[in-house]
Image (tube, rainbow, N blue to C red; front, side, top):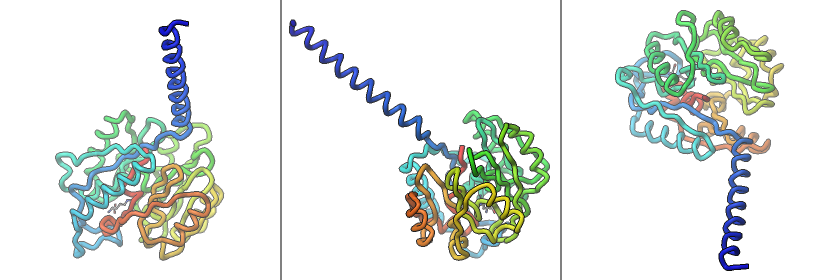
Length: 302
Ligand code: ARG
């Protein structure tokens, strides 16, 4: 065999090996699809009004610290495997300090975004900016402009195939939105279930309930009335958190694959999650808690 042919063979062998490696990494990536998350840089974040029991205008927000905490959250989510789409603060959003809480922008299924129609006047202007940004990412935006509804802050996919949408109603979201959500997410197996939130401290469903995967969720049952507790328990297995953890926003956690990203300081539940196979990343969300939100509130699952 000439030198030439041997070299060509070697090249072929290494090309084949490279192709094989690429195929297996594509297969692996397909097994664990990247979680895409929308966040909004908190340039204009502050507490300049009070629309929930956590907000106290006398306690100032440390802005540089808030920016640092947000950067750290974004970093931890990226490390856990998420792809973060950042909405930069738009002209005209200077007086919308809560825009950082993108969980409230919309609830997503497939390529459809059902936009929030904020209950409080202070946040109504956010919808305009959220719509432009979500459309730029290719989402079809729908949603009532008359019935109050606060996006994924009040609507979480849970249970088998994540096909049940549990919607927190009462403080911010009007139960009259349920038929419209059913019409927009009209797919076989999709169920839309309203859950009554009864404790003013837990005014969005994502402050008292957190699906960890298709099988199990963590929750603070006392945030819900009895019938709603029953609906939740018949949708998913549950792990209960205590009052102290709930006040520390333990349920307001972001799940990326096997990583649960939550505010620091809830060791007991963090250990429980660890024992059942999750990794827990604790981040300091203290500046955002002054506005009544933690890690989950700062993210929207796309
Ligand atoms: N200050 C905001 C409000 O009261 C906080 C929103 C928290 N978001 C959430 N998804 N829980 O609307």
